[in-house]
Image (cartoon, rainbow, N blue to C red; front, side, top):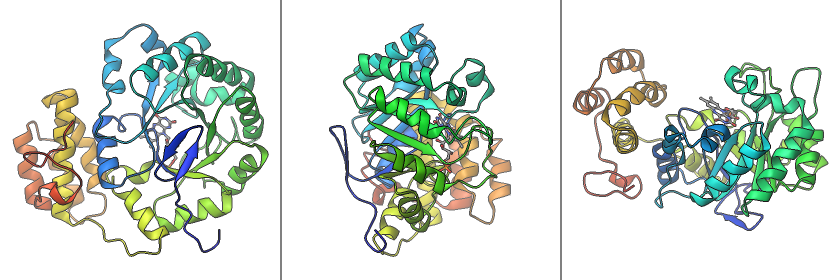
Length: 345
Ligand SMILES: Cc1cc2nc3c(=O)[nH]c(=O)nc-3n(C[C@H](O)[C@H](O)[C@H](O)COP(=O)(O)O)c2cc1C
């Protein structure tokens, strides 16, 4: 597709997506407020939760409720599960199905020590047979489309993504997402589009390519070089929930105008308000301290803004600081709002 627009509606296993852009699962970020803003301001075809522990769900831990929260105001949501016990993963698949998931994903890419020690996340790349058992458990416990998010392999000397992909396919997975790095690699290493292409060519399943997509040009490159059916975007949507709109516009050959500073200010405050609804006021302000650094990454006074953000304790202090640095434009022009410029949950 050298000249055509690669951003197209996507149909996977009965799931009709408006487009083939996917917001990545992002632990610590892609909770309901983040997804609502992505949906309203960028409109990707599919949104993803943070990874959710299958064991914690099975143990009935209340702490998991905020990961499960869902709103009719957001688009279709892929719930991502991590774990290595087929019974727990099957239980979790059934539970997220009840909670309104559009599809269920198995995490085979997380490099965090806590997750790897449990034999899950990127450790699963060392054990394709276990991946197969986990997919079978998800398949048996949910009628929803099942996907698996993998990396290229467990380490530099083992590129086994094709083997893992084939096992997942044989056990009934409906699609795969491939992040073009192996499990030991950090973001400093380049994402290998040609390796993603080899996986996409080796299976019949649709493959979603992931790694370093941030605008229309990088999305186009992922589509054309990796030959994928869809593209997943992670870091580029942190502090820029509109990035999916940018990718769609640029892939359609349109000029995209970034939001103004006051518009960005309005979005940060709205993000805070949505977090306050989900987590309560104290945690919302704390969470905004880390979000602020992403929202302010491309503006001149960012460092000072971030330093001062660390001392904010209330919504009022936060709103005053945002007003001072960004100006503030209630986000009426930015998707559906209710009352005082807040998205309806
Ligand atoms: C803060 C952060 C949290 C992440 N959390 C998850 C997660 O919960 N599950 C997952 O599969 N990947 C997770 N990832 C990996 C991303 O989904 C994605 O695969 C990776 O960032 C590469 O895509 P990108 O280059 O578009 O960022 C996380 C990445 C970041 C930066």
